[in-house]
Every structure is written in structure tokens, then in C-alpha cells.
Image (cartoon, rainbow, N blue to C red; front, side, top):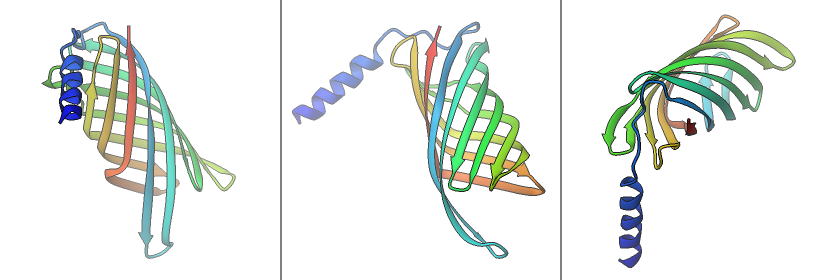
Length: 176
């Protein structure tokens, strides 16, 4: 019981820190990390499982209160492919409780994908449906993305992925 009370007290103190909301004119730098497993079962190509990892640094600017635009450069690696994409994005911050925000985000971009020595152009679009961000201080935030709807097109192949906890992301931001 003592440990539970101590944890509750720490959370209460962290939530009661003075924090400025995301205001027009705020800049940030940050990025996200992602890890996941994908299992494909295609009648023509057979079954396949792959592990993937991604890193995406990002810069952004709040064009209005709670509305940000950003630009991320993402690198994704899976067991068979390498992918580099440039992802402009837009997101809106919906307050849930003090310092905790629901942040739906839309990103549309393009880049290149390499597989087995061949490189091709890539179009991608992503909608983050369940993304939360917590700001413990006025300068730092971290978040998690749990549900995404992704679309990719390359070499006449369309891939739609609705990921529920299959490719979670962890993000960090520094505001100035």
C-alpha cells in the first residue's frame, strides 16, 4: 500500500507542474521509435513474417493553438527491406486531462524503398488514430502511438495496414 501511495503522490506532483499548452508560434524537435512484427498470408506468395524497426527525427511548428505541422524523415528496416521517407504531417492536440493530450495525426509522404538490391519510389500515407502525448514540463513531452492506419504504394503494389498494437511508436519532443 505504501508503494501505491508513493506512486500516486509522484504522479500527482508531476501532473501539477506548471505547463504551457501548445501555443501558436511554438517550435519543437523530436522524433519517434517504432518496433513491430508483421505476418502476411498471401495466396500467391505464401506466408511470411517480418520484424521491423523504425526511427524518425522530426521538427515542427504550431501554426495555431493546438494545431501543429511537422516534417519527419523516417528510416524503416525490416528483415527484407530498407525504406526512407519524407513525411510532412499535421496534428491537433485535444486535451484529456492536465498535461495529457489525444493527438490524431495525418502524414503523407514519399521516398524510396530498397529490397534485394533494387530501389523503387514509394508513396505512403499514415493516420494515427490512437496517439497520446504527455508533457511533464513545459519543454519536454513524450508520447505513444497505439493504433495506426497506413497505406503504401510501390511498384504496382498497394499495401493497407490497420495496426492495433502491432507497430507501437514511442515519441519524444523538446519545445523551445
